[in-house]
Length: 290
Image 1 (cartoon, helix red, strand yellow):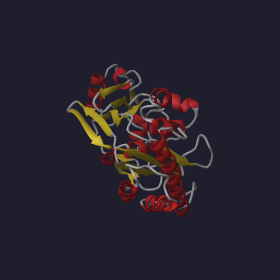
Image 2 (image 1 turned 90 degrees about the vertical axis):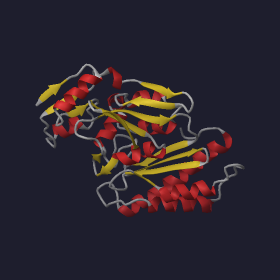
Image 3 (image 1 turned 45 degrees about the vertical axis):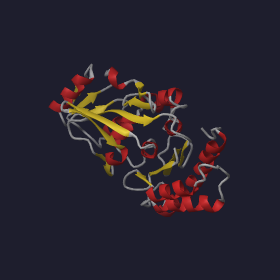
């Protein structure tokens, strides 16, 4: 196995073009597990830890506050540096593994693995994030919905690398919640992210379908029913209907972590809870459960 270690993004893209079979590695929290258990034996590893362009974030659009988050920024920095501007992503990052994993793992790595259970995926979908990918041929932006194409499959070409994620900053109340068999070091049984912004709704599920997915019918229902101009406490009937629609958007399976029926039920509960917290923030301006 070759070990390729570029010093710049341009060098990394050139190496990836020359060796499309090279597997990118940054935090290694997924790749090293696969190597250790002999589930993968690539011809080359492409080490991205020394590429400075991937390790920073910035505000790229000062009119709407779009944040460009480098693919190599670890979860621990997302938590400490972006908790105010993109709170749902910080919430999801807090649930990832252990402190050691959060210090190494990255959103870019989560995207590269494309697991349906990846913790950050529902947030990226709910916020309508754009995934920046690059190759020697140029750079393009993919909507998060376009990125996931199957179980652990993404839309990257063989010569492309994930370079950044573009996210709206201060985009209104947002929440993330997941169910696991314990509080830490656990793969989600199911997860849910919610965003309320400018009269619109983003709602997305994880670990309950072949790919992370948006709950479109639930989004449309909530956007039409919420009393945006005169915020009042929401009736239980509205919360229950929203929860039912979120559960209906799932296509889960039975596995060792939970049954399909339990996942649908749990998603409905998460949807009702996160809606309560996000709407209370919309009404009062005070964030809950951040």
